[in-house]
Length: 216
Figure 1 (cartoon, rainbow, N blue to C red):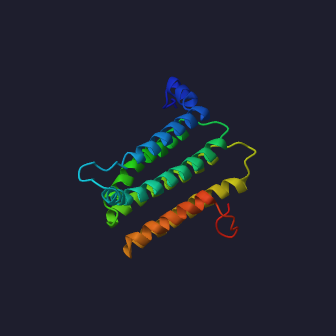
Figure 2: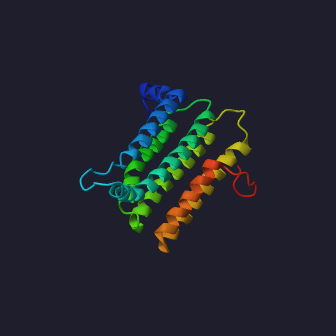
Figure 3: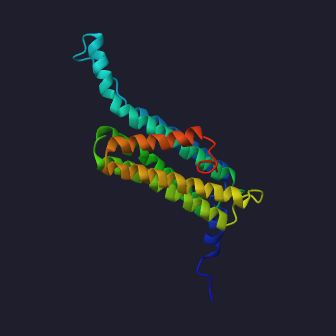
């Protein structure tokens, strides 16, 4: 039976996308750019109509609704970046399929400035919050799938134990479950929902050592 894949194509697929270092470098650049784009939504108030300290203070208070999503998204990008770097550090090598999976993860990262700006503009509307949560949830699904593929394809370093891999699975699932719970709270009140998501992010930033729930 003839080989359905021409030898030259098979050879290319076998050698393409194997550098973990180049993938990590691209990841660093995309995350840094996405983090920088977030701040562009924080605009300096126009000088028109500002004639006193009180006027400027009122204008700055108007920026506050945009500051909350900015802080939220900066923290979540930090959490995402640490998570992706942990995955990449565990790889002995990559391959073309896994590289494209991580490129897909970076594509999701580039969408976060948009969903952040949408949330900042419509902070009290449930649809904006659900779009923001969907962006976060999509990242979690992609990260879980990429890790699962890397393990099954034998791309993880042999010294990485099953316990460590399972800990990474648990962290992704736990984080996404908590974010989903936060999104569901918008049915009651969007302010409660946002506050809960911020608390979840702070947990993963501070990483408190409560063994029975948080520590992986």
